[in-house]
Length: 402
Picture 1 (spheres, helix red, strand yellow):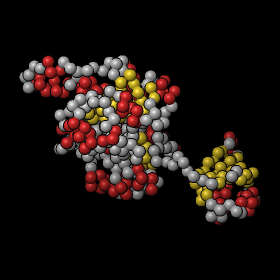
Picture 2 (cartoon, rainbow, N blue to C red):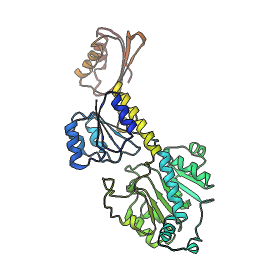
Picture 3 (tube, rainbow, N blue to C red):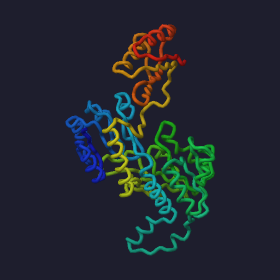
Picture 4 (tube, rainbow, N blue to C red):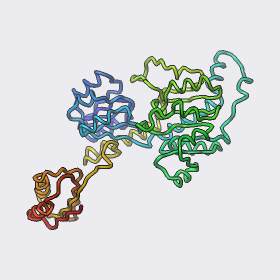
């Protein structure tokens, strides 16, 4: 199948996909209209990206597109809603860059605590200023609050515990027992986390409930000398509110690997008021950019391509409905033969029933199958439906479950 890789990718991974017989087009620098044109010209079945924005225009340019693989964890650079409308799988590689992001988080934390960038700048200016750095607090014994303790958060927790820090965590998915097994203490609200933390590190996805969560109200709850680290997503914070808090709160610092309106290109001008602030230590959205992480992500992406190409198996899909609402279910046991399942579905279609989910299990020796069909619609004539299904050739048993 045809594959476009539109971001930097492991050379070994590219060669492995070619060895599988796939036609791989590697264009890591393509952007904008050129990206749209490339998709229209090549018409790949699979698109692999890292930081590249996959817009509606990019998606619509390729009528053959079946899967977009995000070679990383987050997928907010992809128009997932439009992919869902067109029946295109969006998949990611969760957990493969967690250690890399956790390491950068610790680096930003340490750099701020010991004011490393400021000291380095003075040295390069030919100045010795040991006395200026005598009031650094240190990390041992301080309380770090983790906003989210998933794949990245738990790796940060490990490293903070090694620094003899107290770890608090807020997470909507994990239980108290699970969080405690990581050496952390669960807090029930983000407000409590804000009030109790000396350092706060953000590790939640950018979804409707979290976008803009670090705002004026949240910042008002912090202790005076708090440090916030954001190596997750730029839109989790309201940048103007953070700038205002930096200006009015002497001891408050901010460390970030992510910002709003980051350039699409790897090298470009970037005029960010937040990034330029003297009490901000920043990096260039490179949290996942280590050779170790890139290798791990490449291996996972290649595995996903291999399984999809061989059997259409979809791994790590983020846009399949998990809460399909159906009102009825019918189970049909039948003899496995050509056209049998089609006949069952034809009966349901005849009665205007909308099939939402279908599970078809095949028994050993492939002589018998059971189809479990979830659907919506008017079942006032359910006895008639069951009767028609029972009369189908090869039908062994029909049960109206609900």
